[in-house]
Length: 229
Figure 1 (cartoon, rainbow, N blue to C red):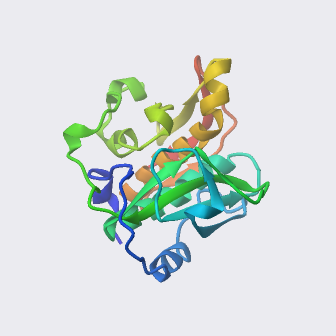
Figure 2 (figure 1 turned 45 degrees about the horizontal axis):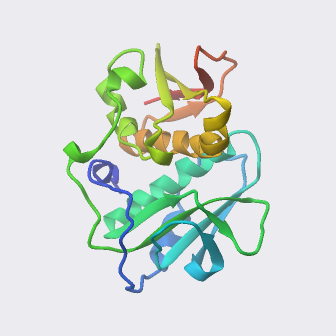
């Protein structure tokens, strides 16, 4: 299934209908989803809005609660896995949005983040409506292969990724925030990096590879891993 075309029209959906959804398609897709790191256990459950504390002005009929073992790069792995699902939902005319401002009413220490979803009449946008950094701002050299990552959604549109060219692909970095921004965005920016990597995978499913090497940080950025596309 080619989901790459959804990258260029997807928008974070905040207007939903109350229509029912066949959840079996979600389960079938998740049974075959690709994780970034197989060593990290993760899970999800579908919840109604009354099962969460939601601190947004809008609400959706359904939410995915995402859980993970808290190992290195667990947030990146969650973003990578469930952005694939978000694109799949988009292909079914189901809108979705990553929701950092939500928590479970019944505490679970493995909870990471939620995704709202539901049927919607407000699903897509034109490429000109994306407000994103230029390719030269997110990489050491402009490279059109990075456009899928450039278009990825992120917490408050912070776009924390930076790509440095290497012989076989790119080293991937995450911006270092000051202490104030780190408290607000630090946790979510790991998920954001995973979302951007998910877009690169969906666009290059046959050649995509990711590994964490022994590399140093660069000025203003923390090393996350290295990717081939």
